[in-house]
Image (cartoon, rainbow, N blue to C red):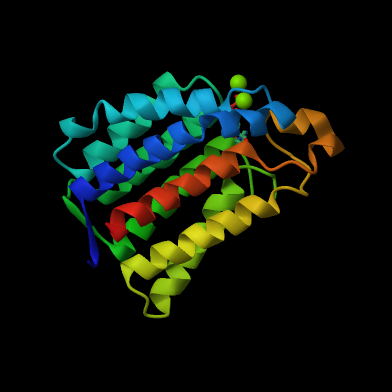
Amino acid sequence: ATELSLDQLADWLRRFAQIVDENKTYLTELDSAIGDADHGANMARGTAAVVTHLDEANTIDALLKKAGMTLVSTVGGTSGPLYGTLLMKMGMATGAVTELSAEEFSKAFRAGLEGLVARGKTELGDKTMVDALTPAIDAYDAALADGADLHDAVESAAQAAAAGRDATTPLVARKGRASYLGERSAGHMDPGATSSTYLFDALSQVIGS
Ligand code: ADP
Ligand code: MG
Ligand code: MG
């Protein structure tokens, strides 16, 4: 397929919630090393709430905006408003459509990521979720530019997200609770960068099925 349908995007968020739930203990372990040991619980609560609203939307913009608002209002931690902004701004960029081309998905995702970066006042290398999301969408676009189809572009994105997540380990955190640790934050993988890779794992599952 070359397009993503409303149903596939709803499935994307459903699978994201599933992967988060399966890994919530792990995410919380990562957050206990450099944060306050709640990232798994935060994300599991928020994404489970998102799933309860997925059937309400008839258009992609409504789906993504509702999902984003739900994350903002249910997560509590810093990650909620940030993931929430990503999805809300993504929804604001798509219009009231029921399909997105591969290119349209990227445009919307980038609008969301810009919103997240602005809200988080963060940049690449701060040891946050941005360090997984940015290389992922860059790899996606590079794959499309090389003539890859949607499936292969998403695979490239998932691989780049994982590499970006791994690259957070040696970094000293400059944003969020981990930054309070200063140099002691180095040597630990960032929890938010880890949960971010699940967005692309989930998308890859939706497209592969
Ligand atoms: P909290 O730190 O409020 O307990 P979480 O534990 O749910 O929230 O989320 C922590 C994650 O949020 C971090 O691992 C990091 O990836 C991300 N994060 C924190 N602050 C920022 C920021 N300013 N910009 C982008 N991401 C951030
Ligand atoms: Mg936390
Ligand atoms: Mg917290």
